[in-house]
Length: 226
Image 1 (cartoon, rainbow, N blue to C red):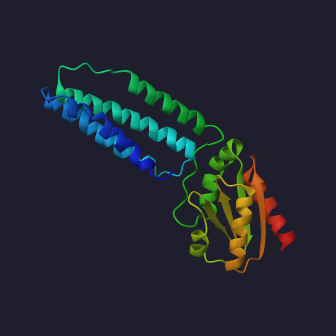
Image 2: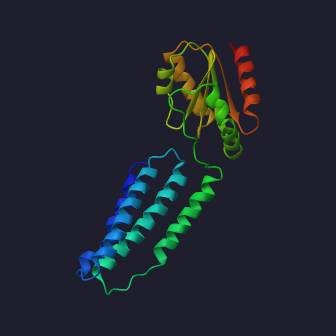
C-alpha cells in the first residue's frame, strides 16, 4: 500500500502536539526515554509497510504499531510538559485490538506471503519450503505454473511480481504465484510467450495436499500439452 510507511510517522508527530499547547516544565530524562522508544517503534512500523504481506494484514499490523507509537509519543510529550494528566489506556488498547485483527487476518485467507529465496531457488530450497507451502495452500489457494523451456533465470525473475516464488528443477521451472488468481497466471503466460520461446507448460490452482503430488501432475500435464 503506497504511503502506508508514512502512517507511523504521522502518529508520532500527532503524539507530540501537547508540546505546542503547554510549556515544557516536566522531566527531560523520562521524556527522552519515551521519545526514543517512539522513534524506534515508528521506524519498525515503517519497515513492516515494506514487507510482502496481504494488504489488510499489512495495514492492521502497521496501524497497531502506529497506535503504540502514538501512545509513546504522547507519554513523551506529557513527561516533558509535566503536571498534566495523561489518558494512559485508550490508545494502547486500540493498538492491541489492531494487532489482534492482524493476527486473525494473517492466520486466515490472507496469511502472510512466504519470503522468496535469494534469486532463483533450486530443488533443495523447494524441498525445504514444501511444508510451509502446503500449510499456506490450505489457508489460501496458490497458483502454480510449471514451465519446460530454456529460459534465462534472471529474465524470468524480472517478469514476476513481488512475493512470487521461482524454482529451477532440472530442465523446468516451478513458479508459485502467491495471492494470485488463475487469470493472473494467464496474463503471465501471455507475457512469457511474447518474450520467450516457451515449450510445454501447465497451470494449477493448488488448494492443499502434497506438493510432490501436485508437481508430478503438473509435469505430466506439461508433457501432454507439449
